[in-house]
Length: 160
Image (tube, one colour):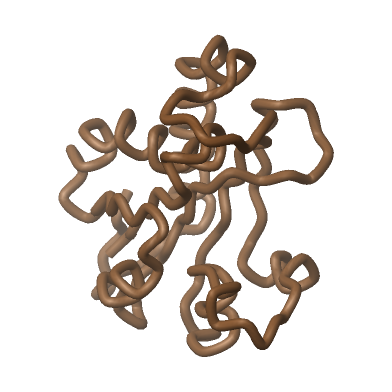
């Protein structure tokens, strides 16, 4: 099965962009019975409980790679290894960190949406809010392309 996870903190402005995009595209993605969209927010333990070892996982999250706000990155989990900073602080863990540290057999991608600001707010920054529909459609297109290009096989059946 393909699991699409929207993660981030919706109370911290743009940090919640992954959750908001996942909520927006959920209905269209789940029209395919082989795709499940999970709104994980900051609860990576809940997300881990939803993932099986043979799932193909797509994480939608806010990123700060010094690109223009709203830019969409697509990185395989292997490519993310170079970006993950290890910490001994258990509060510093994230879904991606734990997947790469403890569940390396799980394949997938990070769809990163470049953020503009993190602040105490339930609203996106004006820059991301203005581009929100475009961001959602571009993320949806990237996910559809990933599914097709990866030729994901589940139980010997194509999920496309």
